[in-house]
Image (cartoon, rainbow, N blue to C red; front, top):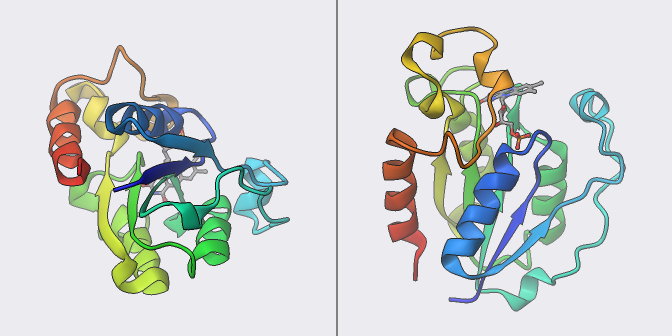
Length: 176
Ligand SMILES: Cc1cc2nc3c(=O)[nH]c(=O)nc-3n(C[C@H](O)[C@H](O)[C@H](O)COP(=O)(O)O)c2cc1C
């Protein structure tokens, strides 16, 4: 299956995750670039669209879309990507390194809300959604600290333990 990873990342965790997936699948990777890449403005709903992609979605059997969640929403650059390419995408896997843990996935700021939104827009083109909560790499004493998840970013030093098992199971699902 010809696969491409598209990603957006503000603080680097989703960049790290996207590059890891693309390396392991040995596939093309491209960064999604909003024309106005200002975190606060995007949170306020300011949206000038994304810049043109270098790789045409239509050339791929499967898209892996990777990016963060803010305020329980499908963020502007990812929403733009989906809206612009929903007719061209054949199959899509949605992946996020987010702040919400598995046991909070259905809450107001939980990742399931965003998964459901992606499925609502793209229907049965969505073949899988996977969350990698940053809490997985926090030491036990910081898992419930209010701001620890904001200050922690995925990297080679902390990508170990529980998250590796989840990542390897994810890879087994998409490695075809
Ligand atoms: C302003 C802001 C709002 C956030 N809101 C949520 C949220 O509603 N749900 C969630 O799961 N994570 C939330 N997060 C956490 C991010 O999804 C998480 O830090 C992510 O790993 C950042 O990805 P990046 O490093 O690729 O930018 C929020 C982060 C920021 C900065």
